[in-house]
Amino acid sequence: MRLAQRLEDLPTYVFAALGKRIRALQAQGVDVIRCDIGSPDLPPPEPVVEALYRSAQNPRKHGYASFYGAPSFRAAVATYYGRRFGVELDPETEVVALIGSKEGIFHLPMAFVDPGTVALVPDPGYPTYRNAVYLVGGEVYPMPLMEERDWLPDLEAIPAETLARTRVMWLNYPNNPTTAVAPFSFLKQAVAFARAHGILLAYDNPYADTTWDGYVAPSVLQVEGAMEVAVEFNSFSKSHNMAGWRVGMVVGNQEAVAALARLKTNADTGIFEPIQDAAVVALDTDEEWVARRNEVYRERRQVVTAALDRMGLGYTPSPATLYVWVRLPEGTRSAEFASELLEGAGVSVSPGVAFGDHGEGHVRITLGHPAGRLAEGMERWERWMK
Image 1 (tube, rainbow, N blue to C red):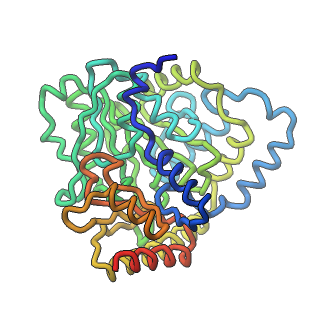
Image 2 (image 1 turned 180 degrees about the vertical axis):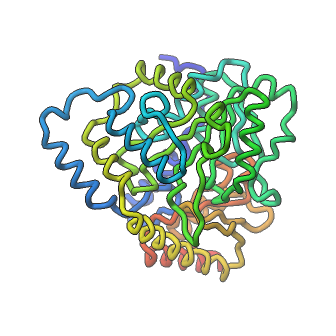
C-alpha cells in the first residue's frame, strides 16, 4: 500500500498530534490543563438545545437533508446578516450551509485553485487555509502578520508576478491566532485590492460575535463592492458554543457560493436537519445571552493577562476572540517552550510556529476553562518559570 504524494507532503494537524501526547500524559496520571485548542466549554443557549430535541422527535427529520441547507436555515442566515451587519443576502443564491465552517474552508481551494496557481494566506494563520491549498497542488504565498503593523498584512508588498497567478486571498478578523481586529478602512483596502487583481477574497469571520468592551466586529460584505469579489465564512462554534454540532455557512458572491455548492453536492449530503432547525433558533438568540457569555471571556482573559504581567510576558491587547497571543522572551522557540511547559507544568498551549513561520516566538492560550481553572494553569506556569 502506498499513500498519495499529496498526503505524504501534508503535515499532521497540530492539535491532533498534540492530543496524542496529552492523552499519554493523562494515562500516566498527569492532570493536564488544555489551553491549546479553541473549543468553548460553555453550553449553547437552552432554547437551542430544546429545539434540537423537539426536531429530532419528528420521524420525518432523519433522512438526507438538502445539499445546500434547509430553506428555513438559509432564510435565517440572510435575516441575521441583515439585522447584524446591514447586508442584504439572497438566501437562494448567496447562502449555503456548511458542516462547520472548516469544511467549507477546506473545500474552497478545490473549486478555485489549480496546480501552479497561488493562494495568499496570512502567516500566522489558521492551518487549514494553507493545508487545503497544498492538497490540490496549489502554491501558498504567506502574507506576514507583524506586530509593528498591528497584525495586518502589507498587500502592496506582494510581488506582481505572484499576483498574476493568485486565485484566492484569505483574511480573518477578529484574528486567530493573534486576536487582532482590523479597522474598516483595511477591509475597504482589501476589497479594492481583490477587485483590482481579479482575486476571490475569502473572509473567515467566526469571532464576529465574540467581542467585548464595546467593540462591534464588521462583515467584509459591508464594504461597497464586496459582493462582486468576496465570500464570508461563519460558524456557530464560537458564536453560540456549538463547536461539536458542526454547522456553519458561506455567504456572499453568487458565483463563488455556487461553485462551492457544486463541489459539496459531490462531497456530502447535507447537515442533519434538526441541527439546522436548532441553528435557526440560535440565530435569533437574545443579545443579552451573547453579552453575558462574552463577559465571561473578558473576565477569563483578565485572569490570564494578570498572570502574564506578573511573569513579564507581553501579549496582544484585544477586545475579541477566546484567545490570548503571548510574546515569549527573545530567542525562545515556541514549540520547545510549549513542549517543556506541558511536560513540566501540565499546561498545554499552542506553539505559535504551528500557525506559520511568523508565529514563531509566540504561543496561543485559549480561554476555554472556568476562571479558577485558568488561574490554576497560570499559577503552575509561574512556578515552572521560576
